[in-house]
Length: 335
Ligand SMILES: NC(=O)C1=CN([C@@H]2O[C@H](COP(=O)(O)OP(=O)(O)OC[C@H]3O[C@@H](n4cnc5c(N)ncnc54)[C@H](O)[C@@H]3O)[C@@H](O)[C@H]2O)C=CC1
Ligand SMILES: O=C(CO)COP(=O)(O)O
Image 1: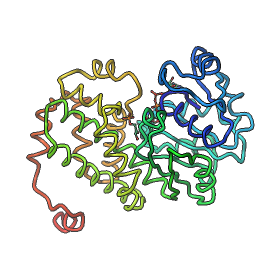
Image 2 (image 1 turned 120 degrees about the vertical axis):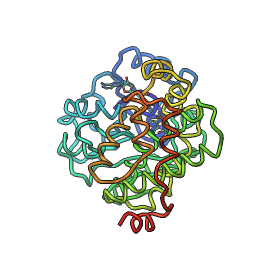
Image 3 (image 1 turned 30 degrees about the vertical axis):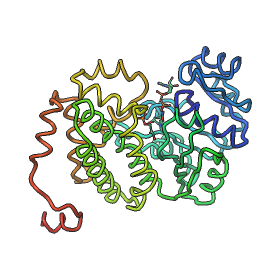
Image 4 (image 1 turned 90 degrees about the vertical axis):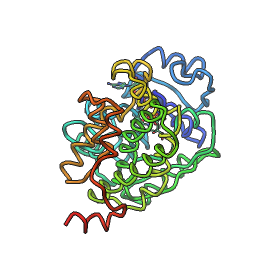
């Protein structure tokens, strides 16, 4: 459900893995192009899509008889989209979230939005997250990912349905960790892109990745995630891929801000969904609610919405009170 970049690339994975895929697109023009030319002109004009994909603009047609329902719309529209789709979803289907964001206002993770809006049991809701830049996957460049579901058997079923020669999923039951890893890395990638736009070097970038991972892990552990998830594909793996790739929309958006562009100008250059631009605010709110310090995410929010200049942001981050590196020593230090 969603024929943007990741929805289209994921449809290709599923079709290559042997499923018949019905791809829902909002726009008729995309539907017609996919069915007539086997290409999605807006996202991958150069990639041939497999025969196993049929596009439709009718959500009811896309959902009819689907055993696996994959959601690939922007995080902030999911709730509204799903409200219109819920009654068409098969009661035994596995519902999969590909989104990497936190809902503004409610501060819900995407799997929480799915269960709240649709009433679907959490055991039927899975997430897929990892170092998965859609364009590389559409080009069949090898990567791995994590398929997480509280019901491990269902995670394994889904794992089998999305395994190809270029996409290798690992199973997990840590939905919270995968979702928080995916949403937080987008905000850190904005910071990394800003550093890159300001001409900063590899020490700065490595520092952002490492301390960004510490922030994501701290939040995750506080909210019930397994800390090991953050050292895995949905944590460090995705953080490294997204921060360092010019294919990342969050990296690109951050770079424009680092070059001195406004939020509107950066959005114009990036075009596709850069989830961190909204999620920096919801993650900031979530961390404050949980009483967890996330200085990089807080600073990104200030650059995006409070007029903080990225260069001043760096000085503010660097001159904070000194701290121990380890979480254990930090808590002793804070007592
Ligand atoms: N593109 C990538 O490499 C990856 C993206 N993701 C995540 O997947 C999610 C979807 O992202 P992309 O497909 O990349 O975004 P995109 O910007 O390429 O596509 C978004 C799709 O949603 C549709 N859309 C926009 N507003 C809508 C609305 N109000 N109602 C229904 N549909 C709407 C657009 O027409 C488009 O088809 C995001 O949460 C992103 O973080 C995760 C992994 C990889
Ligand atoms: O999630 C992604 C890679 O795993 C894609 O990142 P962007 O949304 O920044 O392009």
